[in-house]
Amino acid sequence: MKINHLALWLLLFMSFLVRSQEQNAPAFGKGLFNLVGKDSTWSMKMGLRVQFLATANWDKDADGGLVSPEQNALVRRSRLKFDGFAYSPKLKYKIELGLSNRDQSGASGFTSNAPRYILDAVVMWNFYENFELWVGQTKLPGNIERVISSANLQQVDRSLLNSRFTIDRDMGIQLRHHFVLSKNFLVREKLAISQGEGRNITSGNLGGHQYTARIELLPFGKFNGKGDYSGSDQKREKTPKLMLAATYDMNKNAVKNRSNQGDYMVNDLGFYETDINTFFLDTMFKYRGFSLMGEYAHRTADSPIALNSDGTETGDRVQIGNGLNVQTGYLFPSNWEVSGRYTNIKLDGNITGKNPEKQYTLGLSKYIVGHKLKVQTDLSYLSVTNGIDELMYRLQLELHF
Image 1 (tube, rainbow, N blue to C red):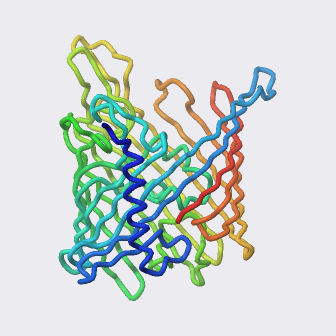
Image 2 (image 1 turned 90 degrees about the vertical axis):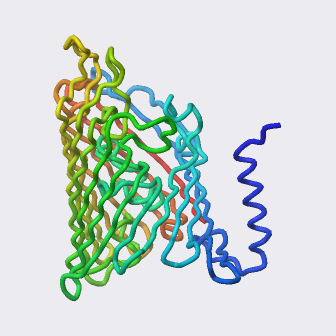
Image 3 (image 1 turned 180 degrees about the vertical axis):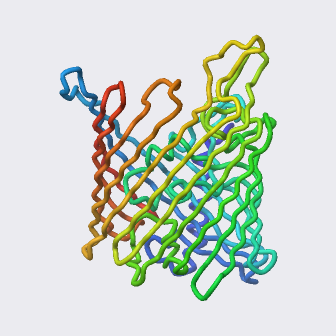
């Protein structure tokens, strides 16, 4: 008799709860429980989060009016998270499982047509001074907006720049290091080598490998509470904090149309391969409740148009082009925040669909317990050149134990 995977995880979850009753429960937002081995050789913290999202979209008709909206309500994200250390505090781990349909979407013949439960499964070893080695599946050191957890976003969801250009998660190794140039000037370096096909690939490794390098400059020192990778100035920085960063990603013989994301490109011989390069520049600034985040993305490919052996086009092509995203907000003492975002996407002129596109977003958030319990809403206007403009309204509740 087959046991449903979700039921199995719930049974495990209940067994952990029973055991954790022997300890004092953590504060809200600090995990469901924190366990430490009697000999202090391991630890485990478990967290649970869920997002409920409602969306309404209106298209403009030929006369400039709004047509009847398309409406949708769903569990946008539902996650189980585990982290801690094993054997030594220098050997940490992180596991994140996605339980919602959206978390598990994107299966193909190369993921065994199975639900993709695993988001992160990575071990992090601080093997020498400021050097740390990561092994497993996790986010690549790409654009800042992608690396910020979806639980800690300033608006309902990430921008169009992220959806068009992100390099997201992959399986591989990462080397991370940091050093201080002066009293406050912090420099962080991140290198990664990965499969180049995204998360949860179970059948082979098509094409080549993916190589990612990122450098981050923090001239005024660390942000409080890792605020450089969190939306909104929740810590209300008492002194200005700034991060400037650049990422270069090269995917050798890539077979997907957005580096390690998107659709597979095929021709009459099998898979079409080409080198894809993605470049990011981004920044984060925070001071006394004010925050500003900026991103620029640029993607090129050696041969962006997929060809058959006789030189004819297959219809597949790499989504090359560039994007700009600027987002800012102010957090009032009442923990209400207003935010605004401008995104400009311009892909190669031969790419059909919504292109080029500009999006303007106005957001409003109420943080009840920081990012752990919040209600967010935003209104976006999408302007499409030679296309149909759209208006989108979203309302979301985030609950994070």
